Amino acid sequence: MHQKSTELRESAKIDRQINDLDQAFHKVYKNLAAAGTNPASGAAIMVAPDAVRAAFSNGIEPLGNLPSWVLRERVYTRTGAVAATSGKIICFVEIGKALSPYGLDSTGGCRFARSEEVSRPEFESLGR
Image (cartoon, rainbow, N blue to C red):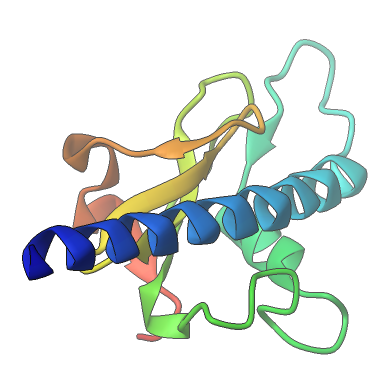
């Protein structure tokens, strides 16, 4: 019975974290869209790691657009740029006891990432 209660509390905590991150990631994506530039004719719009890190900032704190419970060491961004239309995860936060990657994709969607989508060579922690 105790294990079931613990699992329910963890599930409720993860639900709150997902809600917080959805709101935060929408702000981050809005910042990315506002900072976007028109590419040269026919060139794809790319989402660069520096732009993602800049979008986390609220102008005062480097992670100011993320919830206050987020630890810098649990925030990851891509090491290289990806096409804005690719749908690839551009950043994620590890949540829950299992440190599951919940992220923002290049089209503005928020979702859990599959492990093969977030391999460590392609992502780096902001707490490095």
